[in-house]
Length: 72
Image 1: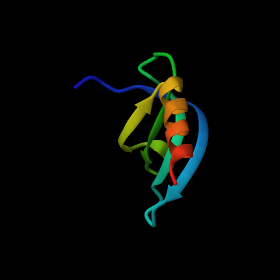
Image 2: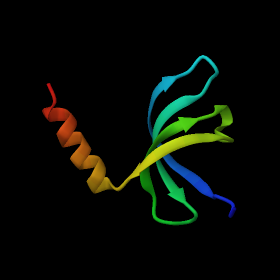
Image 3: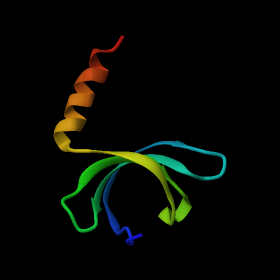
Image 4: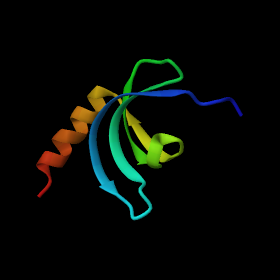
């Protein structure tokens, strides 16, 4: 399996923290040197490990924001 390279460009928000110190975060991340995208996933303390997540373009994120604002 190829090595996964990533750079967290900006932490937008830390949404929660587990008792073991893992945090659920929305970040702007560059994966394997590509253009950064918004990324929502769990991170271990120190960012050495990560959980499964969702990567969104800015357009995806804006659409999600609209949908969430319309929810009751």
